Image 1: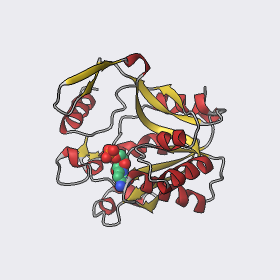
Image 2: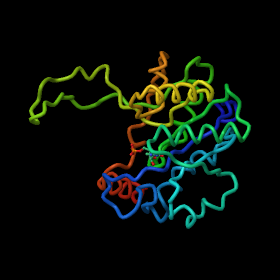
Image 3: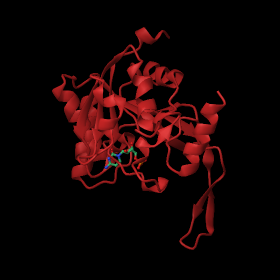
Image 4: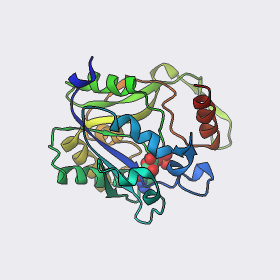
Length: 235
Ligand code: C5P
């Protein structure tokens, strides 16, 4: 499908996390990759898309890094305040979209700040497959390895049937009104929410899994960044 035939969409990038597993001197989205910050690469894929209606980045209140990167002067990028948890940051971002004029049934894509290798073909696949969906869904990757359930002592309790297990990636794509309500209700109920889909599931809906590329990885550990650096150098 031609990109211009895909639905219009808004984007929320939660970027208020610390990323402690990277053991770096700054939040991981500000680490360098190919001469720019990770978050700049993350934003590229959306900013280049003809169907983008608007984009909000959710930043920590005391973020000292954003102002020093070129993105900070890009008028297409709006800012919202991050929250205590990822879901609080996303809710603030969604509220900001409402203030920008987004409608309840507009599509919103939520994407991790530290997931800089999203392919345009995956973004278009997500938009195309879900354009007429009643619920929405997410990019995901079927589990590849044999999976083990661990006991407290670090020994294997059992081998899990991997044929029905998927890893949840981003972007995750839902209607603004439904996602806002689901997130707010789940937070009010004290439910642990680690991605947008889990809030939508908790609200009783069944998000669709759209198979994406495994290399749309979230930079989490130092070796993830090394792997991507190496890969980009060889292209
Ligand atoms: O820590 P993790 O990699 O799971 O975070 C996923 C995304 O959520 C990151 O982009 C991170 O910056 C963001 N986040 C946030 N606000 C928080 C915690 C995480 O925006 N309070």
